[in-house]
Length: 147
Image 1 (cartoon, rainbow, N blue to C red):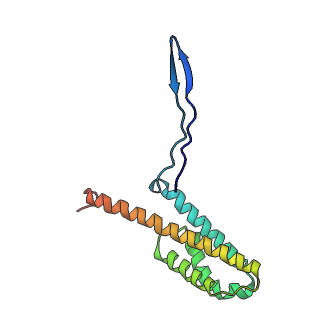
Image 2: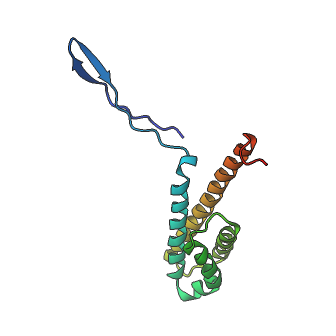
Image 3: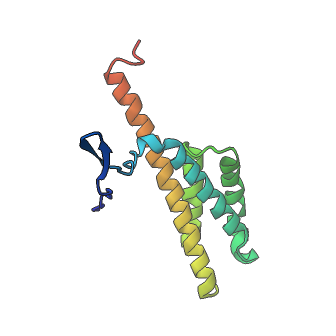
């Protein structure tokens, strides 16, 4: 993906007999590693939104999901998204939603949106865990944490 750097034109600042050129630039976006907390919070928010949306589904669609959603919601309420309990529950719900037949197009669109939110939360959970694992592995290779 190509991004465009936005820079302002130089500003000339007079100083006795000379001029100083000053260029103001917007800060560059940080790496994923610098954004771990934000990414985790985003995943929690997406998961919470998905739970709320699932609970708002018609009763006949929600009922088969209820026990899975209850367990998943406990993980979300504890803000525990970097573990297998969260991931397995999210994957179970995604599998069940894939087999759910919506009675109309509007409900189908709602289910698709829920699936996107759950997938994004799940992918973010894996990404944050991967970054933390990489940090630990690099630290070990640098002699940090060795006995």
